[in-house]
Image (tube, rainbow, N blue to C red):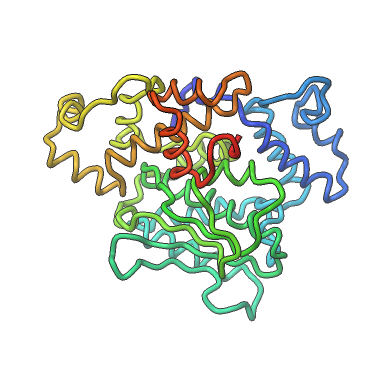
Length: 345
């Protein structure tokens, strides 16, 4: 697996670094010492001027320093059992020989269950396909996790689903997310994993996605896994990497970031990809998505990126996305994320 230079220079939003620093403070750890070990020349939350981003290298080193200090690769989000260094690699190795993603995920669930405390609630960690056959849900309730920290377990599920997407070379889009706890005081880091709505106060932490992904064969090998693990904190938390053969990825590349003009029609897309309409629909269906969903997600992601730039007004953002009517942008953004753009910002 090679990672494009452009990807490795993409800055990491400070909200993610803030979450790590909050973990350091809650645990009473030497904050300045860990920041120094991670190569930070400053404290990003105590700098004289507000810092919006940190580098991928700084963020990855801080993650690694924390994991080594705790000897826990989940940084405490799975408190019912320790996850010492090397555990996640062993889980990943067990998944590589799973054939389809469904089998690989079930192996990981069994591995997880064998490592957790006994006498847990039934079906604490499970994966099932809905009766309609179109959707699948992965759920987990963190035993021993307080209700107000269940959102951290939900974020952990999102990270694991990103890794599953890497295994099959496809982006697994979360259709619905529920959290077994109330909304946290700060939602910026959680929104980073779930730009769309999250239902809080549910019976479990659960992610619903297209069941078609479960039928896809694992396409990675041990050499690629070794390269991936060296960059895992950055790739899983900030810049998920999927396969170059993914049609979804190719379409996103064609769409680009300039969304002011009309996006290509489906017919134009088939010509650009040198595919028949039937083949393109079948490929998109196999990746659990559609052209309309890809377009909506492109607009949503671009809108979120622009809203993080304080110098841009909401009208500017709407205009950059091709909305001539700001009220139409407000309606669309609320449909995508559950919040109006002003409140989301």
